Length: 115
Length: 117
Image (cartoon, rainbow over all chains, first blue to last red; front, side, top):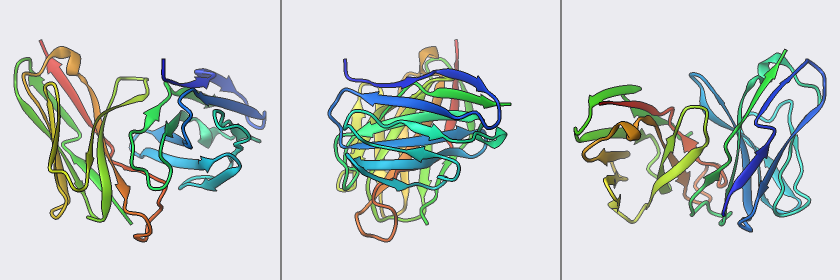
């Protein structure tokens, strides 16, 4: 089954404790991206990747890091989480990268709470 | 900077009614427009993708139209059912090298649809 898988789905952590949210897709997609969704603000892009070893900042990259060492995986790293990073996070992927011509597939989301 | 607006923010209808959801965008230089469905606490599922050269797309009871020149799209849902209750979002993809990011969809904030039995 074609899918984008995120882990963990739910996480409660404390300020400053490094964490990683994993994202994996099994569709051989070139493009992958991370979004956060907050009430009243909608979906905002954090980082994206056009292919292996090619990443770039989205609209709200501060406090986050990413890497793309393999085509299927695109982890999101919070080096020192803060309460303002409490949010619902989504990973997404698409077959085409430039331009974004195709359907965007989303993971189920990871709800993160930083105390 | 592209901005996408969806009105109304919430809509409640009785089962069986036909309904229209609206999406408007400020920059007509789009490559395509997608409509997504999001169930509470879940990810987004793509419903329909309209290329800029197309006027509409249909899938079952859903029909999406696109008027690029006026910066508008509508999602028509026929014979609504309680299972259609969800948040519906539209998103636009830019034409490459038109000034915006080539690698980002711009999303509206969605319309929360409730279909009452």
